[in-house]
Image 1: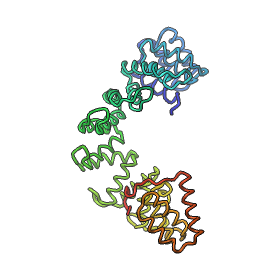
Image 2: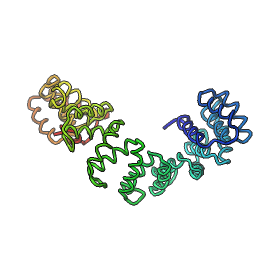
Image 3: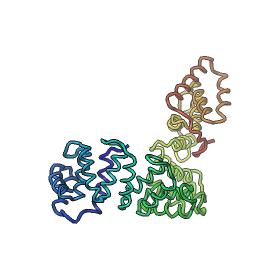
Image 4: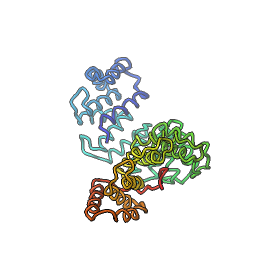
Length: 390
């Protein structure tokens, strides 16, 4: 969970940048600059005087300073008082911040009823943060009864406000028919709006829907640019999909160099499918020089994440002594784990190598597999999610 300071200060600037009081322009604006630069003592001197004279924006600043201990000792009681004085004057951010204090019980007794009323007031004053907070509360059932319909309703207000994240999530609700009637055209509309603002998950969702013709008319020419945009922004699923398309020549020309480029990007983010795909590429010599040691390295990374096909391929390398020292115990261990992860051929391979192993070696391999499982490893069950899975 974000700290109070992390949560409140960006919200404070967001609202004040568009809703400053007409009064107290010169000195107040200088105090804002001081606050932004961390010169809290100078800012406090101005804010305290303006707050006493009734300036709600100054009262809001004082509330944040007392809550976060900026230039003053942290004091939730005084933070509450200043937020309340600003909230009475319909300062939307003060309503929201006060609601957060009650919602999280930070320094005061938790009261979700008061929090809800304050969030609703902030929303009625047009604060986007409040729209999204209310949507999250109803979607997750936090502090209120879970209600997809109300979640979608609040999310729609944020989407109409122009929030890309809300547009993406509302599009998903329309796509899934959650809280709203299923409507693929509206899903496309909101995903397109979010994607145009650079939202990577919206770009990816559009690309996949167009690529497969899922809900939307199949249109590969539309799909590829959106997938590429999402991949370029680090969306790992998009990187994998573009990589696979290049590796297998699906809908685009076969291009191992581009495939390896995108697999490396996804692997750098720890994606086990990409790590396995690189292992397969090195083992087969596709797009890279054939290198069994590199193959073993990449298979091991994916295997350690519980990727069953990688466990199987790593076991096979240990069995043959390719890229790693021949080791029947390690081979047996990884075959055991691949079998537990759902890889069907692993049992046959275990039986085959058992013939050349002693009872002690088999027991040791079984203990290693059991220890690996106890330390947190578990099979993903994704046996064919990357090229080279066979």
